[in-house]
Image (cartoon, rainbow, N blue to C red; front, side, top):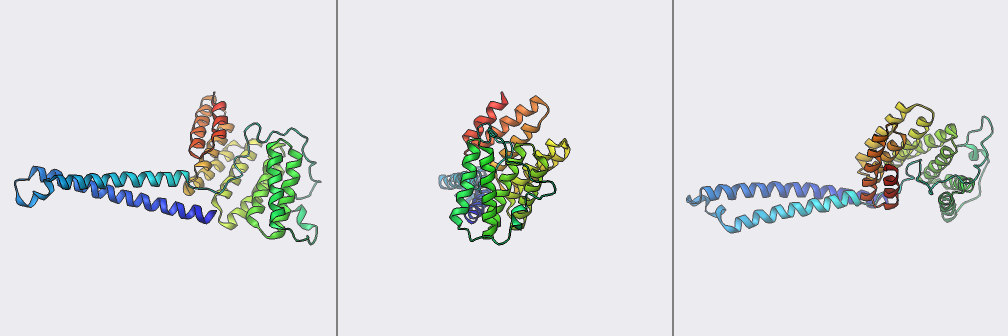
Amino acid sequence: MFEAAETLRHAAWLAVAGGLALLALGCLHLLLVYTGLLARRESGWRHWAGRRSFTAALVLLLGAALMQVVAHRGLAGRPEPAPTVVAALPAGEDGAAEAPAGKPAPGQDPVAESRTEGARPAVSAAAAEAAFDEALAARRAGRAAEAEGAYRRARDAFAARGDARREADALHGLGDMALARDDLAVAERFYLEARRLFAGLGNDIGEANALVGLAFVKAGAGARGQAGRLLDEAHAIYLKAISVRGRANVALARAELATDPARARRLYRDAAGLYIRAGMPEWADYARSRAR
């Protein structure tokens, strides 16, 4: 998926460059046509004053416009790695309807707790993905304890297989679940470990997602300035990666954390527009409902 997305992004940027080149040639052609009309009595300029030259200039400009449309669609609608998205999910996506799983014992590291159990049996990729899918389904249904247990099984399975990318996804999910039950210390550990793995893999989108989660942790702890800086850092990464979905997540996060109602409504509207561009109408509807 990442290779395809990267190829499409490069093609879109080539379309941008090609469109700009055609635009420059078209403008130059129009300038020559205009000069030819002014100096059409001179033999050297008669060619540029003709209908054929004017048509060629229009064709170049039309080609530039088409190239820009192609580039815009490629950059705004290209397939992106599906992020674990913002930690504060819309109502119905992560409603903690059940009692959360018990907190770890004092001094126990929840990130590494399953890695000290000795050798694990071989786990198939299908079983690991099934555990992750189970976590997502339970989370959407509001079964928090079941979702957390499935995320842990997925995290352990991916770690046993050496799949650091998917392990990071599961760790991010565990961070979201800990954050939902206001266990900020545990959530921070999971997000930090997810960020470390994503950064080691060069996965900018995943690292930015973890930064958004960490911003919610800091805001929950009262460090709103630090939360804002983390969101700024995430936003810069999303801009570099041309991730419309990521920018929408940051706008939504800023709206959720805003203390000024007018600013919050403006940010919700911005998030709704970005979610529409990213092809996520349900999230756009949620953002609009919060903007009222």
